[in-house]
Image 1 (cartoon, chains in turn purple, cyan, brown, blue):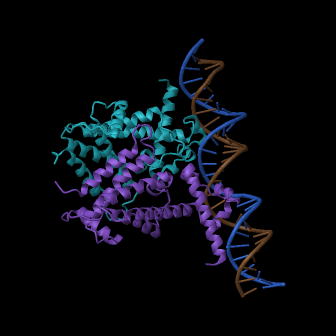
Image 2: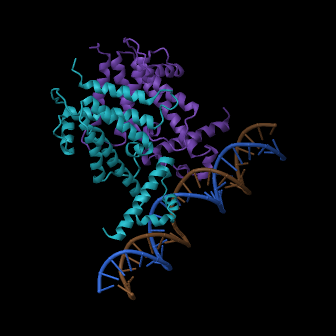
Image 3: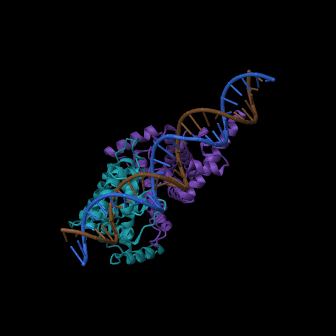
Length: 218
Length: 218
DNA sequence: CCTCGGAAGTTAGAATCTCTAACTCCAATT
DNA sequence: AATTGGAGTTAGAGATTCTAACTTCCGAGG
């Protein structure tokens, strides 16, 4: 890489780092090109050399976020173990990741950015995160189902590159994901704040319920 | 009510109506005081006679939203029936409500508005919605549990005015709520859009799983 | 019926934002 | 050494929310 390009990349990273700080402190609306420039000791318009506009910056933050989450989940499920243990590891890692930067979690999975349309590249990152979760789900000895739903899920899995799993496993993975996300998004949005209920206990109870899936059928 | 106050109230309602239109069309960022004024044939600053600031307007939309949702859920669970049927009714009503105005759903349960702090009045409305859902949950013949979690839930239920239900029922209600919200928030945020999976089937499958709770224990 | 107080609306403007255009300047490459 | 192009600057357009000062006008009370 060219020396110019190195500096350029360095600056881009610094912009994103500061943007994440502002995101953490003041939410997505706090990500201001002018403010970031000021923090870098530079005027606002200078940054338009590095990002075509504010949305492009946000898009890149989202994309990076998906990749970071995928790495985290992948690391969490890498040590092999019983499915229930892997699920617990993945769920715990997911929650830790979400709570470490709530605004970033919401940036990925909350209210979508108005004009934003996920580019190919981002979808791939999102898929990596999903695949990591499906890895945690793993085995399944149940007979395959053949609803219309399972057909759609199977087709989706083929396109996403985890067609080797049964559609039941993939559906189960989606269910795991949506249930964990349900609790996490409520927690991160502060809905439990005044309730006196510890969201962690709620979360762990849900994980336990999910883990029961692998116990012998009744 | 004074005639002046009548006009005033009428204007306030019109502002909120237009705000909801803009919300539906362009998201929360599209709610602009100036734009609403223009649509009403009035300059922007005129509206500050009716709402102290933009946040106050948003807050009122949120509050109204909770009340509307509570009414909807209450109506859905009013015809008595088997628990599973009531749950299906409530879940279907909730989904219909969310899909009828996705941006409004996100306004209530998505990324929180930056400076926003729910006023007492809003919490009461939110509680009404929760109570309607708990009504759908209804009976339970399981023995009570005594985790720390169930203690917190029971305490919360007492404060919220549904202390007559067992903590298990209340916990179950929270679970129902978070699972439905998990799927709905993903659907409303457009996460299933390119997957080829029909979110309704996913939703109904989850409702079915929830309904199985009332079947005799294994 | 008539006055008058206060509500409602206007314009002007401050402070913020994103983003464009034109310009300067410096450094690396040729 | 000359040139080219990237990086930064200032100026400014067009938004935004919101305040302040001013005008107009209507409903309520005498």
